[in-house]
Image (tube, rainbow, N blue to C red; front, top):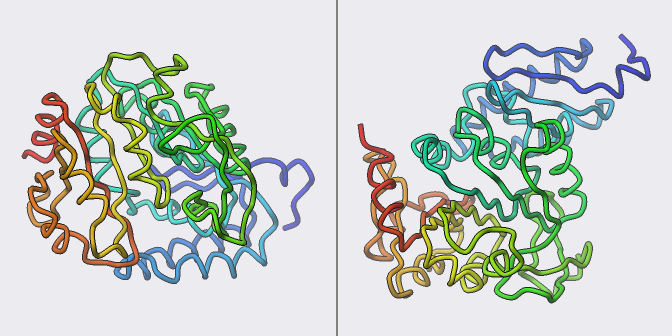
Length: 322
């Protein structure tokens, strides 16, 4: 069945709650089934090979947008067949389960969500949705093409979160080169790279207080997914860390020195927690060596929760309680 111009412009709509797919051709329904099967087959291997399958499949598909109902108050749009986000077509899949567990557990808390390295904005969409507490959210993304997708997701959710096209670093006001080949892995970490994509303005976490984006006092949940610049970002947020803030940072599985954890534990007053798969609870990291047991896969990232706040320390301890 050929698509009319109108149908080609309209998105496919997938509801993760029911599994219903609307607006798809027969070929697209077959592709969606193949994507779901690929996600299930590669799940035991942390979805290794899934992105390659999606890229191959996408060559046979007409460019379309997919809009996924994440919950009853959250829509998330991305190109159908996208090698990173198409795994959401598997209803069983939970993206960053430790964030979902924590944010669900603090839905009733009054906090502002700061989404650094937001990509297309899935966590800004969720944190600002009813089931997660309808929190104020600010999404910051270094890539202009990703920022356009991010604004699209803000728009289809009623413009309920703010979008800023900037890169998080230790300083504000300068500029850096963004490089990378995959939209989920663009980074400013390597300024010597020959794969420069665009120049981007730098902003620090503390500068968000200085420019009035966030208040000097309050409760904050900061997500740092900034592809190798996590330590620099924390250095630029020392004032923010002194408030009621919990920062969720990625410890890269390939870093067997656990550099982020070493930095955090050396900072006066900083506490670090990680979801322990053995207990299902957020356990405090007292020694760097604990990460040897947690980081079992070199190819994926592990979220750690960094805070000086007694309030957030208590909430982390309660988040996995049964």
